[in-house]
Length: 71
Image (tube, rainbow, N blue to C red):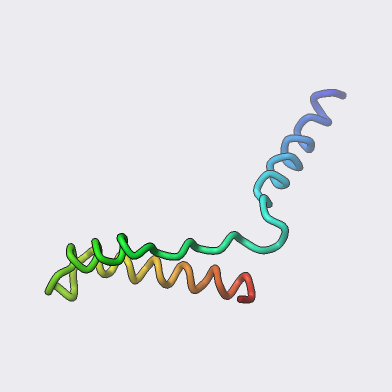
């Protein structure tokens, strides 16, 4: 009987563990001035660099988080 109840208990505990926020995900942190100036220095004159594409993906991710939060 204990083994029969342990499987549903594990499933419920794992599903509750995934919902760590109360309906809204935490917001993306705002970039600092130092981070922006470092990115400008690294990207330089290469507008199609992998770093710039990566930053664009972060912006897209944070826009999705912002939409989910309703901000």
